[in-house]
Image 1: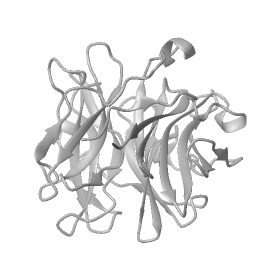
Image 2: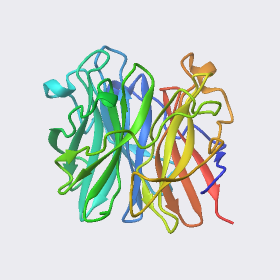
Image 3: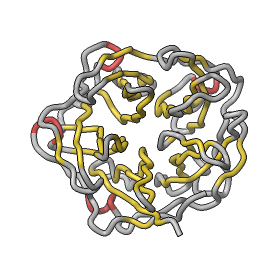
Length: 298
């Protein structure tokens, strides 16, 4: 396990701009490629159904320059009310982007996929996982793909729920990263009574293979209804087998973003990047801005 993380003193690192991202920029997906940081983020302008995905780049992982136009916009029925909450991996020269397609209203979100060679031009592949089981018949979103095969299969952790706002984490497999199947009869991670994640859990960052197992940062919330990032390790031999889980959050923000922006004080971590001797955890704060937390290896 890594952490605890410390909030970056100069947060936020990305704030609302103009046009398509004039109201909010949050839930950033960040990777490092060719010594450059690439960020995809959820953007909103304030009008109904305005969810777009924007792109920004950086040399240091802190100061980002944004592309003037969104790179993913609603075009199809499965995303008619917004393209939201990106997660990004690069596999064999291709970028794979999972995002939430919002069809409008509760229980209408789905996990969508798009691919690209340059992060600007994207080919959409539509909804990639149909509501598979009774325990995931409500909202289903937050698809986080492991960027390498396990037992000759690609792995994706995702959020599903049986009852509104009581989400759990499930597991899906794929041979080609396009077509996904959920073979298990139950989720692989549940809320825990008495902990910070007693009410709900959902995938956060894309999982990473480490010596100890498959490590993933997830979002959990409890009685206070505040999202906090936790850490979990699954088996490399069996990605559905839980090996270790942190009792406390990886970090708590240094300021009350909810009070500052007049919205829920959510901390939604969606990217974990290794840079030199540091681990950079990128998160969306209060559904409004992009922020950063850092852990320095000893």
